[in-house]
Image 1 (cartoon, one colour):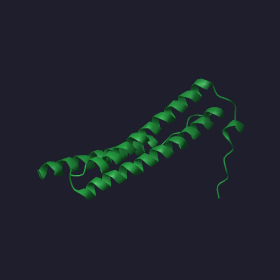
Image 2: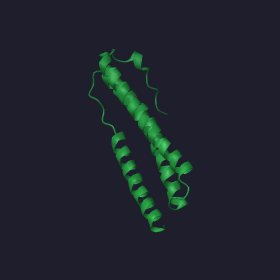
Image 3: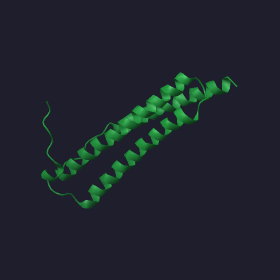
Image 4: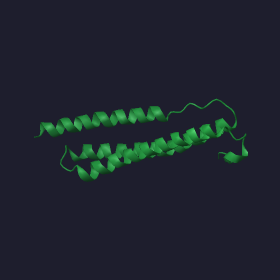
Length: 123
């Protein structure tokens, strides 16, 4: 079992408040991205009923929901790791979240393009 991490206030020293606020703004931007992905999934499943094959629409919806959850949880993990690095005056950690986001959105774009093509081919 992994040891529990100490609370932020107990490690290192308080960084310059501007860096903490910038880290918080980045966190909130990732959360907004997760909410936008969630909104896209809800719109696709509830507003677009006759657009392409249902299994493909549901696949895109599931992918959007998974990506939304990944981005939202990843935002917190990223914020925490960055805040700890700032408090301990270490280099900022590398983060896989942007790569995950780009890969997920690229897959959604390709699937949506297929959906559009199939919808146009059947009309």
